[in-house]
Image (cartoon, rainbow, N blue to C red):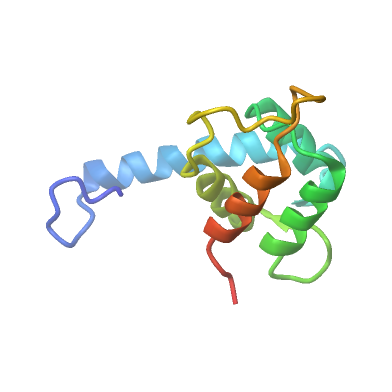
Length: 123
């Protein structure tokens, strides 16, 4: 991703881009870590996801927290937050209509099942 010249190594300018990328994620993470605990709970994660235009149910957000929580504390740590967001960004959200007919701001169950199947396994 940051080895732009495909040399197998990260050169200095590529490293600078990597550091800037991580710094942007860190700023984003701390913007949603309201209690300054160093991790994001389901409510904080849901706020972040809504900012990213993912309007997901409480139950599904709790599922995502469990899916990306490697500490088994029901929270998402910084590195897991980056990983979760990048995984979600890779999903084809913009293709087609994925919303419930009666709740146009929420994703359909079929779409969420497909999303879960496409998410990488952390185990």
